[in-house]
Image 1 (cartoon, rainbow, N blue to C red):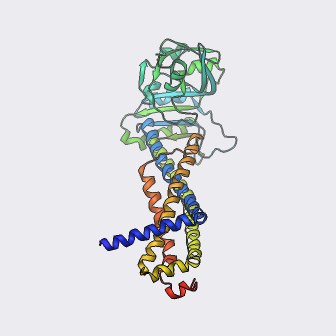
Image 2 (cartoon, helix red, strand yellow):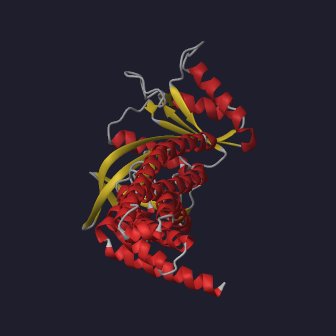
Image 3 (cartoon, one colour):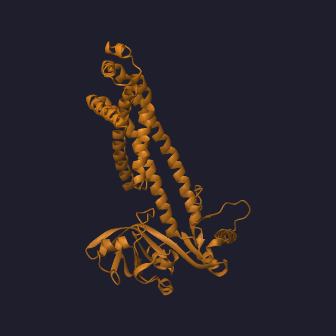
Length: 412
């Protein structure tokens, strides 16, 4: 065993010398492997990120709730109305929908500015809601109180502030009782929503303020009959499938939809969100998986072809080593060590490239990225497998060279 280890050590030393001697060739091989590993890194980190985001969304959404949007967002047929939910729909749910205990209508105004004193910031979403917004979204207040029925009835200029907006305008100080001007509307802060950090389509959900729905529609001259969304919470979440069917039947009846007429609303539950994200993950894995596999196979062929060339160019070196007593398995080990060194270098470079691209895509909002130790193990294992698989035949060819012919420069 010590003798075997000594021979392996010598083979590794020769491999390091060869990799260093043929720098340009080594760079080509490592670069080809790096592209495949970069794609693999993005696959693994984006799938893990999507899984984390799915769990965050489901935790935020809650298993006992249905979110209703006006219009059919799945088909997005041209000309179809999106403002289809009314106050009468909300009252009908409160009055006659089995199991429902909280119905909260909502609308939103996007792309505003918030200002307090000398500080100002973008306000991606100003949400209008009826009483119980924080309760409807299982969103604890870090301080203050929720919007009340009286606030909604009076159209009061009060509101809840998200954690991110609060820090932008007030730093670590309490926002309670302070006035924030949203465009020209003064809003007195009555509550601060706790930090969540979950994405919400326009920044994160912490980048928002919530005011009474009546205040929003009055002050921004919006339609007062219709609203964009409803949040309904139910007792007995284990019966959610039945609750959803009852809700769909009620809305179809109220909207006069019969037979095969499509819904003019969309019902979203936690399970549907998980299924939708699962489909996105599958598509992402399929697309990037083909890309990564193709890139890594190309890298493997580049490695194999360059190794065949290397064997042809190094026949005298191989013949000399065999003449000095090197066995076939030692020559094979040397070339496999070279392949492993090059693919390992390619793996490390590919992971760095993939992480850099992942961070860029994450900042651009294209993908949600989550790095873990699994990325390192998969990347390194895949690169080594490619190196050993595609390097074995050139290594065996080198090992089987006749030493006499090789010393004459023949047999390559």
